Image 1 (tube, rainbow, N blue to C red):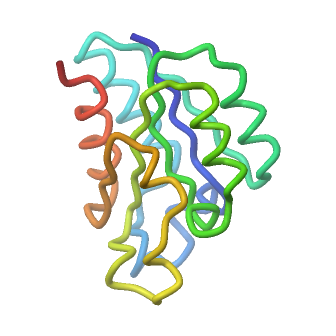
Image 2: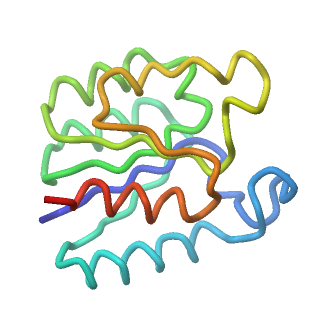
Length: 139
């Protein structure tokens, strides 16, 4: 099983960006954790981060993976285009967020990704990613 992990805008700043909201774990540490967990669960994990909507869409459209774990970050609430790309490839997806988006500003309560995903996990910090990967790989 090949899993693509997509990290959206500003996640490259993890570890220093608003640690009271996002924690102090870096994106490199999350990627390492996912690679190790994927190996443990018998899957290969590739990670991709971009601050650019089109680059995220292009990466998804390559369709060279079996499952998608995505933290669209701010694009969660704005990008019909990313949702359309996920729908178009027809590959199972799980949406994850480090923070509990429902405990934050009202505009964050809407997701364009959630309706097309197998599920959404939020509020558990870096463990949101681990839970999402486990959910994708569950038989």
